Length: 207
Image 1: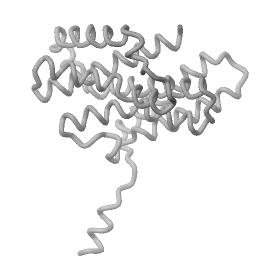
Image 2: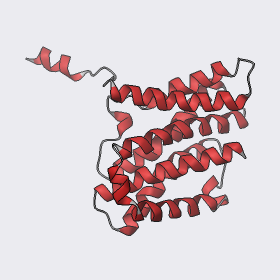
Image 3: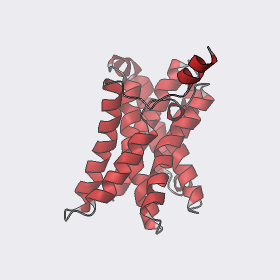
Image 4: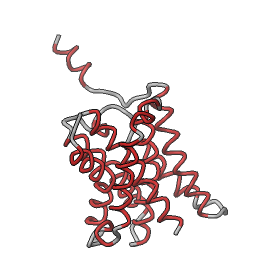
């Protein structure tokens, strides 16, 4: 039940980030719902297909659809308050990747995947809803830019498996790894830490 609640929290966080992007693009009500929906379930859908968990979870459990619908309605009603939250899109997107990374890892462990495959699955779960959202909204997905995004998921996933070796309750390891993903992402943005680019050097050589 604990992991289910974490999954629902991730769904809410990503749905809000989808609503914020859609409203920024001035989409209609249906467009807002679709963007919120694909942001919230896109990564989990790809994850379930990869591990053969079909029908995918949101088809089997309508609570995800109801959660997204309720989140969209509340986000629209309180859109003015959301705009006053500084960098609200970044906030909810960051919370979403932290929660979904660990949800994906647990899904991988449940089907007997190796740690490295579980981390990959967690990264896919956390990242690909945002990829679909950005593509539909005609933006370059964050994961393909220099920003620390998928890297935070990978490092958080690694930390989870390290923490599992420590004799503490697994719930604490799980929560700590979520906070590590969120913390790395926040610190990277605050201190403008990015992955190295490859184009400046090439342009310099061309000159």
